Length: 218
Image (tube, rainbow, N blue to C red; front, side, top):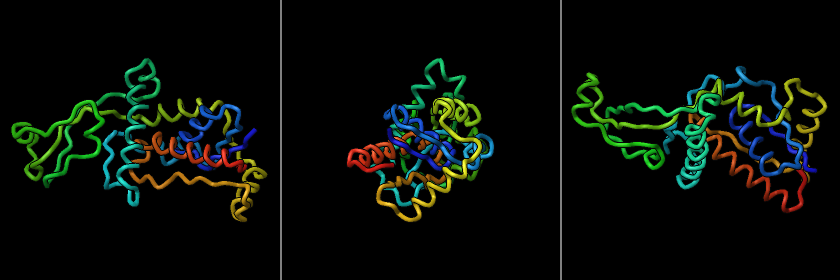
């Protein structure tokens, strides 16, 4: 049986743990963190699906698009199901306004509806500094509902009370760079963390599977 530890219990960490457990049901997956639920940064974050290429530095556009597509597929399937209310993932619409003429954004390929605002729509906003805009029908993720639902899918394999033995063991092995311990990093999402968490967690899962297939221990 594989032992896999996920360090950090924000949306990214829990999404990664859930995907590992789904793909590797025989593995022991434990989420270790000093903060859960409302104590995480994710808890107070907004989750409107409007990812752009400018919010994550150092990530090529092809990977960003894959993260966005995988995330959209997950969230939209929930938003149109009986789980929408429980998870807090809902369809919303509105305007995105700009002072300077923008490029067509990344999310235009995924959202339910996207178009440039008409002159009449812009004038009705009565904001003279904003001369450009898009009308968008997209999704919003209410973290205070989605996070607890996601955490339950981890089947209680998380640790609310930190085990010093577990924590010290993991840190010591990582710090010494023991060859048998493989570390997969999945962080640095910036303001796109909530929206892209599911997509990036799927890539992290593939890296873990690749590591296991090379007969390394996690």
